[in-house]
Length: 288
Image (cartoon, rainbow, N blue to C red; front, side):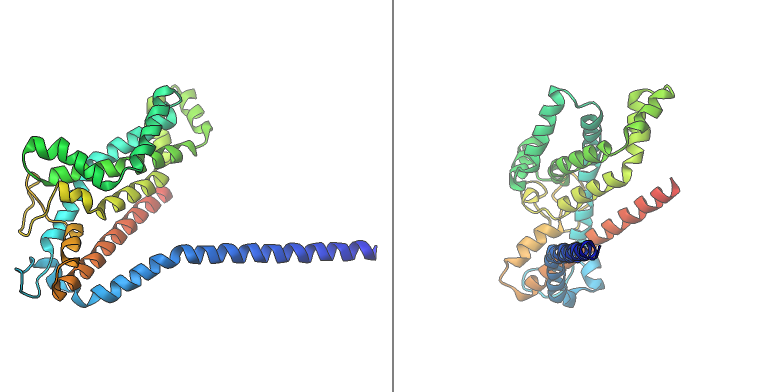
């Protein structure tokens, strides 16, 4: 009896030791995963906080050689570009994801899924060239609309695949309940399944919008940039990412400092977007 008890205690100690070791490794791995985020945020704040003031948000860029000024046009331009991209990309991505999850068990669905995966790996500069060919050349000018189309193309793969996976996680009993009540399959998919999976889909939407907001290469071929105030979607428009690119490689210390501030503002905008989505999805989840 004592021998069995000793064996049991040794096995228990061994399991506790293994459990502690595995938990420690997972904790360390989590720290390593989030450490770059904190380092990027800390370095950006330390470099850009000095120029972060009201002037940066409400004033226009100063001419070359003059210090000060802001990027009001670029902040508004970024919001317009992401808004256009979202208006085009979100419906296409979400509906494509619904199709793949609910009706995509055929050869066309397999082809669409494969093409979506391929599109997610296409470099953003190639997407910019495609948008240039499809929109800029026919319109014969750079425009915010062309930039929005390029950003929408970048959003679609992420939103599509996330929507598909989130819908697949919805229990099959929900579909059976809807069909049992005589609801058509398409209504069940849109008004029951999609609504149930909305919280997870919102995460994919956020990822797509965040990626689009941080892109530079496609906008160089489409929206181009504008040092003046413009909200016309059929004309070139300013954006924070293009300003960061231009100011960071300029030989002026003031412009370099403003580039860091623009990067900080971009992080703040994406963080506010994430917080807004989190509040909306959590309140919707509690209401349901």
